[in-house]
Image 1 (cartoon, one colour):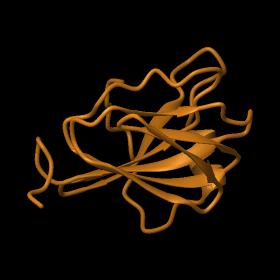
Image 2 (cartoon, rainbow, N blue to C red):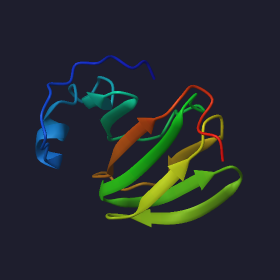
Image 3 (cartoon, rainbow, N blue to C red):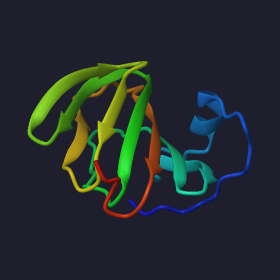
Image 4 (cartoon, one colour):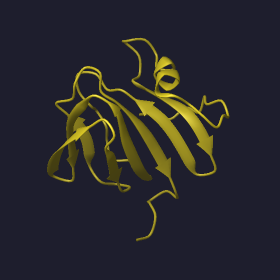
Length: 117
């Protein structure tokens, strides 16, 4: 996924406002909604399959709606609205078997290569 910053500075963004920023059904299924320092917040609503590749920065997901399976480094676990999911930089992860309404907040932060543990 290419990351284009088109966010408007604000202190509150609702899921509905974020979802409205997504392109049409044939376009990309993510949009940047906020940036500040190293923080990049996006809305992501994959359809059909999730083509993600490992990212160069640490990443947090919060499921907004729907449900599915979170694949992380060879492990699978169910996820649903309200769940918090973490993917360190460079680790293979994606969503599988998700509902048609599945959507997540995505938060990238910290330096390239991820935070030191």
